[in-house]
Image (cartoon, rainbow, N blue to C red; front, side, top):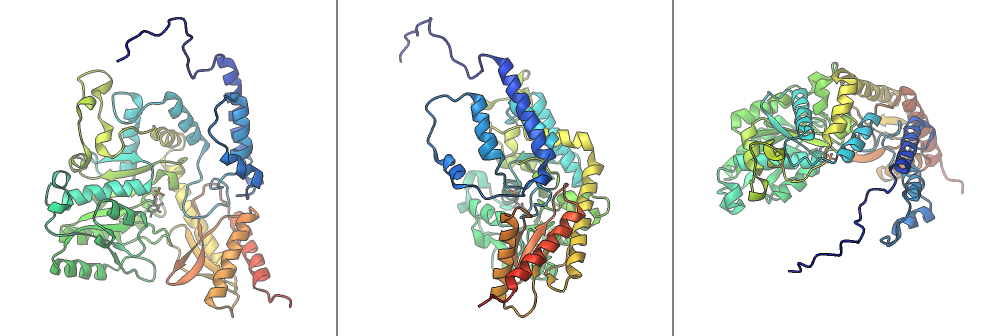
Length: 493
Ligand SMILES: *Cc1c(COP(=O)(O)O)cnc(C)c1O
């Protein structure tokens, strides 16, 4: 070991600036630009293709020399802020994402400034994190004493819940013995509309994709309960061990909500874990007009939900809630010698890492907390109702147009439709509709995505956006018709 003492006369370095006042000036400018960015969203394209020279700038190597932070910010402003994905724009309806909110962005900034680590401990961030989990728990109707954890998003929330379900239902000490100790292979059940993250979860859990049995859905995209019951009986007869039913509250394709009460009944009757993937629909529970659509969600053993979707928290933040706190903790808790609790001091709080896979974790709770404090629950519930109402409005516009056809009933806020002037085969219809979608994106007018339901390709608008107005949807319909007619017209010879 080299124990020589370094020369005492060398200056000691730090990342802090020599002059805080110039940092304050820059920070004020950044805030002014940020407010302007959001205030003037509507004037900008939803998305724009990036010029080649800007794209090339992302290929430069690791910087060796310093650059003044003002210049660094200039690069961010010109190359990054100018080319967003677009999901906070009023006419972004692709996939399923929240539209963000400025208070939440300030929360993320303050969380980073404080820099607290949510691995646990006795400090305000840890308490606030647990308070947000409690609020989300209350929203889905879970009892006091249920536990939860904030995570990066819905995929990880589902993974954690399925891990708890797997361990709770294994019948052996899976943590100690591993999957090889299972007497019979475990089976999980979900509809054929289940989100792809569940496949990743069962694969990651070592159960294999086949352990997730997909059950057919009805015309509205909801799991067929009778078929599920038969599948469970058939698996038992074949020596498999049914373990968990996954209900979906809001499918990603069409927003369908499984009959959660019926699934809770069936799970209870069969002695199975009942998990709800509520990444889209769990928060509908707080919407006064539509809350009934997710009735039964509070009866689940676990729920995954996504504040960065319908609570519009800036990315990222997901949440898992687990009814049985002890089982939740038993699944993940490890107490190494370097993470022991103390009777007083920083390590006297709850070790939050005992409820998930991450040890270090950022302070994502603050952005959720600040926005909920600012607006209150009723505002968020009302915004969810508003989006569901807007989806019905869009569906009615589509139904009024001969050349547009609605492809699925609208349950929540997802509208599946396509331009179909008649006389085009499936292949040509798909080509025309994909081209409509791409031109809408490339001209910056609107962002839709697409999917295939019951073998038919369609465009898909998911209105999870507190900035959308009905006139944005009028514009969408007019543009789809205009582009469709142009594209489907016979080409001049
Ligand atoms: C979005 C979504 C997920 C995945 O959530 P992420 O936050 O994107 O990881 C899972 N299930 C459903 C139904 C979803 O809509």
